[in-house]
Length: 183
Image 1 (cartoon, one colour):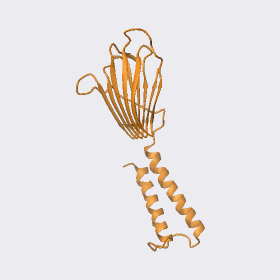
Image 2: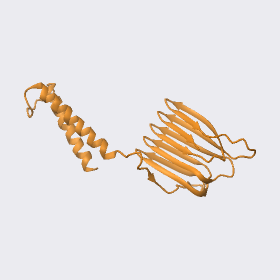
Image 3: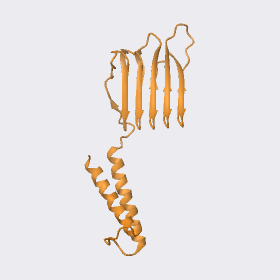
Image 4: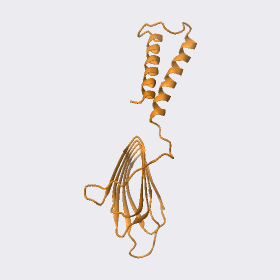
């Protein structure tokens, strides 16, 4: 555990003990007798405690962790799973053979603009309180199938009308999350 997290937990415990004293659940007399400064002190302790915990785990949007491509068991399809953070995956001329993306309370940024896509491929995108951003090349078509519960899919891609154009099939399952697809 981080030091800031431990300090934040201590502040919250002290604030909750004082609330228990104010409400008559547990009698301890370590703060002022007057109720207004006491409630202010409890609020301040709770605020500082929660802020310390959140700031110890907070990652800023411009600080995505650039990761190498996680190739799955089949040797082709990538498998990405993110919890409480953000990961960025960028193709630099490699062949793309599909992906399975899971974002749980976090985000995934997948950049396929320079990927070699020669045939139809599938991306299975699943979110729970998170988001996935896909950037696809203009030379491919995108077909989206979605299942959403208080979530959504934004498809802002250019539709290529040339014959024999490869297609990326995106199957999105969102629970309080979303998938954004752009060129």
